[in-house]
Image (tube, rainbow, N blue to C red):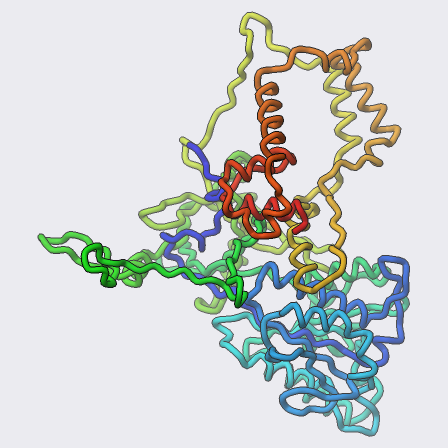
Length: 623
């Protein structure tokens, strides 16, 4: 069976025939940053060996988050709020709270290029235009943290908790904001602040703490914030990273906590007759591709909108689009597009448990497409989490996976549910507890390995024990420790986004892009690697093998053909003024064959639609 790569990596929500309920993916975020003098007084040693303040660390993380958000989730809305400030700017006119914003933008709105440009200069102008002061002091009833939570809650009134995820990300290096006051005043202010936080959480708004620890002073989350965000027991012990963590590690942890996995959809898991629970599904890894090209009007610079009209060939009058119909009892039953969509939603498409099998029965080659991660939710069915945990623990203990039926009658599918235990490193959750839903293949999808040899009269070549030993030693030398596909970014995409960022922010220089996919020449030149490689070559080719002599051998027909195609592409590509075509927007006038001349001549990929080819050419030219 031929597999379509686009279909393999396609999420369930991309399937027009999928009738499962979609969950909301929009997110409202308020970045709440402590601007007290303590955030500016203490320093760390940063990535470039220079001293950095906690305020700089928070600002740099937020700035990077905004740039990433525009690319990944452009519909999300954000607000940036400082507390413990000298000046005030907020909807409630509360003291010590300053909401940062730019003109022609609401306080809570989608991030824009202008917002990012102005925010990148915030440290230069902060003391002059906003100022820093302690908002909670002995002898004063002013409570800047209470005011900040109130202002953030007001900003997040937009939208419903059912249609959007609402979060407050709190940056601070002060573990006890009421440490300077004592007695009944402290108890009263602590109580009112915790009640304000509880009221905020009751409205469906989550509060997440991002503590900024000092190298010589650990952030004591138990002093106050554990009660504010609801940490207790094991969660409290594992929340904070170790005291000796470097600033770079802390920034990575902050970014991990700032970026939240999106719910793809919500499904019902039927365990036995009469017992069902609700699950959220998540797409953990998907390939990233450049966004689609948006055509703009040359005068107004507004996006062009395509409209289609039907005109009668005889009269020239506009004709209403014909409805789709289905014949029934000598009549045509007509359907609108909306009605067809509703018809497709009728099927339940539940996940239904069939039984359990040992983990040894699940093979690596059963993975035809990326798995989906599932986690319980109590929003619709109360008690789903409790039942899921019991099932999860039993599967881990007995080393079993569940076999379930997924989908409807039109697209039946067997899936394997594999339980995964939680993994925590450095106070940060590396792998969450839950289950991976692996889409099992049909029997026709499995192809058995066949050994093919050009000459069946010659015995099949086999590696000797010495060759296997030398190959094993080489692999151990060049093995990538703790390898993960998430460690390497696509250099072509990073260059594409860097060009867009430089254009949008009007930067003089394009950000430097490091190609992490290139071989580590310095590491490969280590004596141990070089010796292991030489030993392997000797064991396979012998002592007198010469690579140069091998290169003068007869080239294969395939290599000759590839060389001829490349030479022809270079010749044809030289006939076009590519820089002029790109500058005048005339690349779209060329055919895909002509566009591929440039790509082949420059050793670039030639797959994809015409818009993708043009985008690839422009990216390579730095346009």
